[in-house]
Image 1 (cartoon, rainbow, N blue to C red):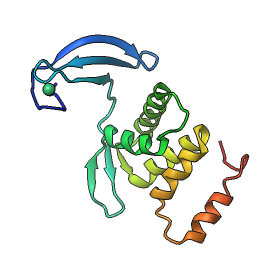
Image 2: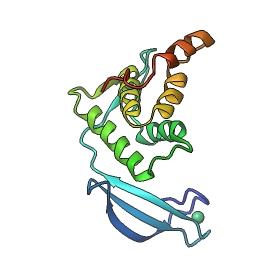
Image 3: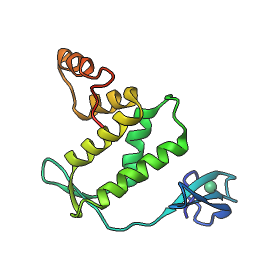
Length: 154
Ligand SMILES: [Zn+2]
């Protein structure tokens, strides 16, 4: 595994342990070239998923990209990082079990929003505001006003 800091390809595994209720293996890695430390996760990938954009463009599903967008939405929220990992794994499993390897980006966005709505309303609003690209301020206000407790469906 290449070091993300200096690009050295010869990094060492310092520690491996099960994570996310045994669906992943978490490895702590060390780069002898620059002293950098980083973590990798090994997971079962049941199917190779393809994201189909609104424009019709297709690209390989990228878990890291999904994770980035969710972590941005979750920034400074009082949610355990392990819980966020579990949530992302849950989303990926749902995508894998949709029955089709081609998944419209819209479906992914909806599943993410559904999941965030259950876990953290603030993160949900952040994600949704970007995802839905609310241009007009009154649209966004309307959206938030619809988010009163109890109105978010399970
Ligand atoms: Zn390095």
